[in-house]
Image (cartoon, rainbow, N blue to C red; front, side, top):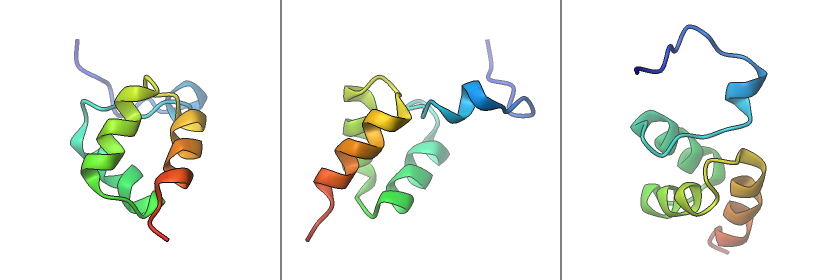
Length: 62
């Protein structure tokens, strides 16, 4: 079943989808990491945005 992008709310904000290229790209841009690293992080943490944000902070280039 397709994701209904018109229905966004709290449940959607807590997750980041690895299957949606725009979400991966937005996450990568926000975190300042590559899209490949972003996709790896999102898949590793099952889409949990808090865990992915924390992992991305550790992955940022210095």
